[in-house]
Image (cartoon, rainbow, N blue to C red; front, side, top):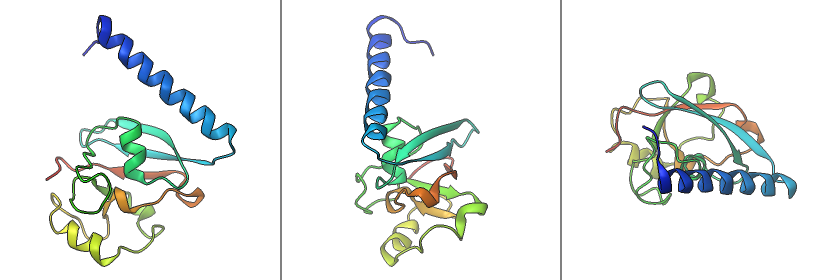
Length: 138
């Protein structure tokens, strides 16, 4: 898909706004972690997300497809469900009971790998985190 005319201008503007925002955050000394989001079809998106945001907010702010986040991060849906790369599964904080309950509604949850990105706070320790999106969100 190629954007034409006004759509192309809007897309460029959004990209420039995002780059300016990231530059501003870095200039304020805010640390960033690289997160790799992998779509179900295999397309990778490697982005920097500011510490203190959630992995869901990083996806939303970078227009990553496959993470819908219908509830906006309130842990009231399962539309930000991902599979955490096995190398990272033990490095994340434990799942709390509310997140565990919401994962019951996720599409094909995998024990030990399924997480809701709204419940994962980005920090230096998560630099390099890899998450994969399910085929669809429910």
